[in-house]
Length: 340
Length: 244
Image 1 (tube, each protein chain N blue to C red):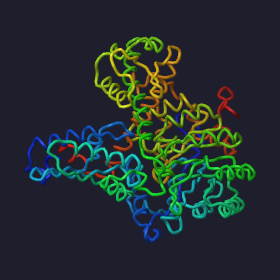
Image 2 (image 1 turned 180 degrees about the vertical axis):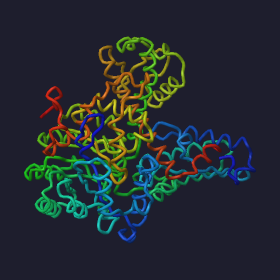
Image 3 (image 1 turned 90 degrees about the vertical axis):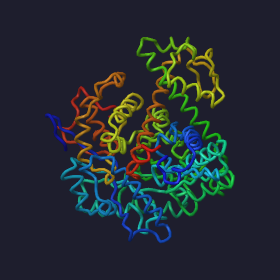
Image 4 (image 1 turned 30 degrees about the horizontal axis):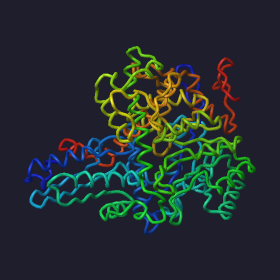
């Protein structure tokens, strides 16, 4: 819980990782991809305040104790949602698997939500592995990374019939929340890999599932907003927006927030630090203090209220994941959260 | 670029012409010149032989290979068209698909052939798709000041391109509309749908401009992120920026 100026905020970090990108974990023959991936992450880390940037070795692999300290002792986080990214073609034990994330959960079981994943290209075998993880870890959400490489394939689409089979199974298993991340490669390579339009059809077909689009579809904010306007079960995951823009490009942070508040609305926006790319502490503190800059450029955007910040920082995610919110962090009767 | 040791003893005219040609090459996704984005790492011009070598770099190892291909191909084509240039080599470095892209473009192969089994079509439609986004963003840049000066959105439906005051933003809008073979003369409507070329109806202009602003914010934010990441990846960026 974070307290500021007499207000109490229940903070859910909707997007964190516990990865191992150390050289010992690089797949022989795929070292350039494993190295390229973590170097790319490190560049994003450089967009945060200088005092929050890590040295490369620490960034490649950090401990359970590091994570607990960064998230809960210093980071103001009440509950953190672990989103896996497998990348087993490049990392021997995977980059950030459900199993590895479970090590973190074991150290503080009440503070984490452990999401898992599936990949439609893995067929029946993948389905069984998915079911097994749900049974073992009690997962309530999945994180899907469509640009993941697999045996020569450079990605998949949520439009694939096989993907619908997995979405149906999600419903049957009681998994409500589907987090989606677009990456730079997807078959066929001549199409825009960052296009989020495949989310549209899935969201229409599966009205009982919530689709949280990570990084608000950046770099395709407009495509994402176009879908979110039409689909009430599509949500904006703010990771990278806060971490990558709030410090490095504050005016663009304000513009992106303005567009999201206008097109998507404060009831469907979810905070995420993207730890360990960025630590949550500065993001939570600065977000609570944030307002639109006093300039004509931002005059068209409606202000974000304290109630709106409370929703974005935690109440919206608490609603999606069924978390108990302490009484002092809830909105007063005059500030109902839509859909509750 | 001019402080490149190999370029130092070559003719200023050829260097200038090559630089100007590179300055007309746009990142098709960000709609900005690759020179201004810092994507030209070096450019070597050999006056004696007319040989030019251009090295490109991108913000991340995993930047989308389709846009990377277009920039390499466009840079090659632009430089090759400069009078006095006899041979061009464009090399994209630090990219996961650099070998496929550099080899494919140099050999004049298409994108599909360079990525066997991974691509279905050439990149014309992708390019057109982003040109339509660029028209939208450019429309916002021209119309936003008009709204500030008192025009209402429906009122803008009455204006032509010729009615808008001259500005770099207007020149950019005209250029982007021409790229798509859309109407771009002084008598053409100011606010058009880039997909159809038709004028946007009075009642639909307000909504159209909301979309245009969103497209602009999306593209410009993407550009800012790319600049930030490039500076993280190549901390000596400023040296080249000063030179280029």
